Image 1 (cartoon, one colour):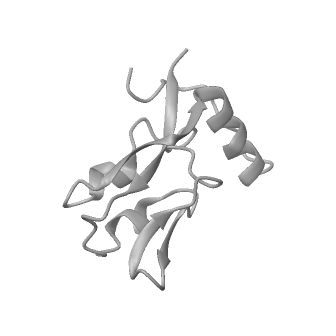
Image 2: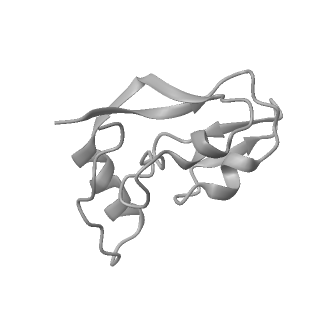
Amino acid sequence: MCSNVTLKITDECINCGACEEVCPTQAIVEDGEAMLRIIDPARCTECVGFYERHMCQIECPVECCLPDPEHPETREQLLEKARLLFPGREFGAGPAIGT
């Protein structure tokens, strides 16, 4: 079983918004106080159920979307989260990210 962790955005973020535009679950939002983007772990599925790779990591020009060890989740948990966020949508098993 593939063990995953939700992603986080580090302080190296240049606030360009590239990650926010590609997030399929709208988990990335701007933190008005810090003027940086943050990833909501309650909405982040690591793109499981949508893409085979982490889209925020692909699009980030400064590589600041990194794993957050504070939020470990299995692939099955991430897929269930996607189902809860998007009821009625079919999610296939698909390949595990990082395998």
